[in-house]
Image 1 (cartoon, rainbow, N blue to C red):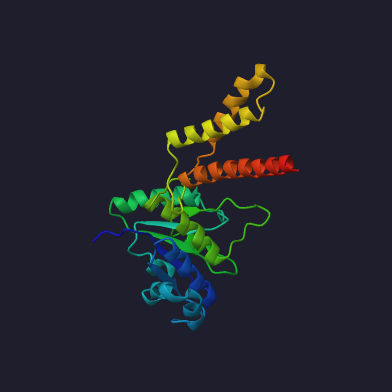
Image 2 (image 1 turned 30 degrees about the vertical axis):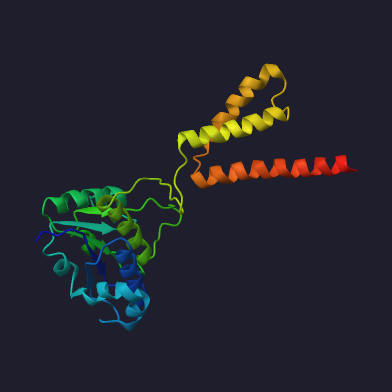
Length: 253
């Protein structure tokens, strides 16, 4: 069965907490294939399990341990190395977005893809990077380019998710209501226009049509829900009732 996701290879990770945090980041974005190269504190690592917190523990349970980077990527046809420096090696350099776009296309074509992440202290060594087809470089502040292992895994996993399960850049979540229909917004505009007209708001007469148009445009621009429309109607009715009460009281005096 062809692979459906990239393999994240943590090369000589030093802290169990970072391995666990990387596992959490992976599962957040639908990834669960991890390989470890010669983890400093051995394997399994209880600190990694504690940091993985619950469901992400299965990423660690299925993680394969390899003695070397070469062994960890031996069955892969495309390997990306995450690093902030090219280390004087001639390589194609990709952003995480470009790399995961390329990875998605290759996986769809039946290839096996891996992403290398280096140890916390100094990152990947030249011998590791030499085994990669391309470099993944996050466009960070050049004055402070160092990323934590788990941070780098999260950024890469996020970009993978954007390719594997793209979503619209914006959406509206309706909490127990529906969008207002055009006729509902029209009636709301009628209500306010009539009451404001009675109050002498549209003055002077030469500017009244433009003021009414501006008000209609405002209602249309608000993306109102049915609940919003009902609230606006209720607000205006209550203001008018309150005004009538005050005026009635003044006349009684």
